[in-house]
Image (cartoon, rainbow, N blue to C red):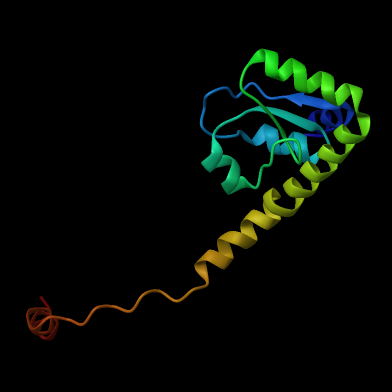
Amino acid sequence: GDDYRDTLNRIRFFVSADVGMGEYMIKNFEAMACGCVLLAFDQGEAENRALGFVDMHNIVFYRDIPELQKKLQQLRNDPQLAADIALRGRDLAVSQYSFGRIGQRIVEELQPALRPHPPLSWVDRVRLKLGI
C-alpha cells in the first residue's frame, strides 16, 4: 500500500521488465499514475494502440537493451522531455485506468440493450405451451 506508493513517488524512471508478454502488467500503470516515466518493452502495435500508448509521448518503448540505454540517456539529457512524458503518462493512467474509470467503462458497456430474442419456432411454441 502506502510504502509501495511512496516508493513509486520517489522514482523518476521506472523500467518495466515485462519482456515479450504481449501485455502490460498493472505495475506499469501504477508507476505512470505516480508520475514515473515508464520505460517498457514494446508489446506490439495492437496492444499499444488499444491502450493509448504513444512512444516518447506518454511512454518510452524499448525493443532491446541498447535502445533502452539510448532512450534513457536522451531523457537524462533532456529533463523537460522526461517531465512532459511523465505528465502525459500520468494523465493517461489516471483518466483511463483508475479503478473508478474502469468500473465506469464496465457499466457503460452493460448499458446497451440486449439484442432481441429471435422469434420462437412452432416447435418451441408448442413445447412452451405444454411446459416441456
